[in-house]
Image (cartoon, rainbow, N blue to C red):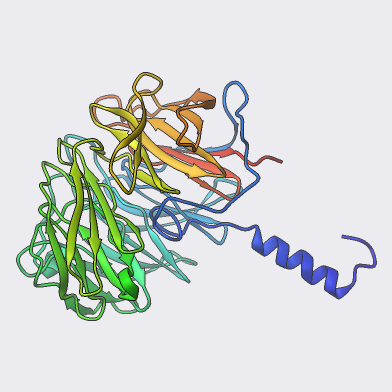
Length: 412
């Protein structure tokens, strides 16, 4: 700063610094769409990949991704038989605190928690794999309140609760599933039940709720094992419902644009686009087997969808028509996708390869790749790298079970 900087210049510098600070406070970012307006990132990676800033090697077992706000990274992991919410300083990579949530979930496909925490002001909301929903102080790690999905008639899904809680206004919304009502809204300050959607009774699966506003009518949209539904935020009543042929596991988060909702899931289920009219009538625009996304996620950028499709490869699909634009079958194995500054970050679930490609409907064009090293020992017998990359404030965060990496992808 100049020695004799004016108050106006100081204020302008402050505004600039605030404007360039980015956060990732929940699953798929601020708007739950996996997109960011962040610019100035590396457009080409050097050989061997971007510089690693730090490696945190005690995240524990689990598939939960990071939430990042106010200089802290929040992530779930199982350590010493207990699922924990862990807070880490984003600059140093040092642990700040941890909060116990309950007994570790165990499974043939990997132990531990499976979701991303949600940061809302000075509170963090997280869901343990056995169904404990907790509200935790972001400053101290003290648990403010806990409830269990079983309190609302829920049963643990085959691979544990994996949904990332949605905080909207004074409500935190989650999906316990079951005959008492699939979706609940709780008072975010106390955990008290506000409503339960008795009109939807599918069991819980693994997708996360998003907000839609077709024709200006706000609603919560969730993909359940057998139905895609929209519910009223005021009382949980079902506004519309469309059958969905979910098989084995329904995982990817619905994608909302204007009056339309796109969904996909693996195991041969396929994909579907639904149009919601002003009277909350839902009409299927298309339903095909082109995109069959297992759990690596699909992103909508412009008017095209991008992600990996089982049996097809990496795919670009037209959002409006459902038709294929391009596919790439040999460059990278099945995995997850993330986006920032005109680039997709694609990660293979088996090898841990990271590839930077153009975010373009013109085709697969690489701008660098590397293989994650080291890789965790506890994954060798079961599980894969299923945590999606997160790119925020010039850093790329990757997780392989108990290993959490921070890479510098800023263009500076």
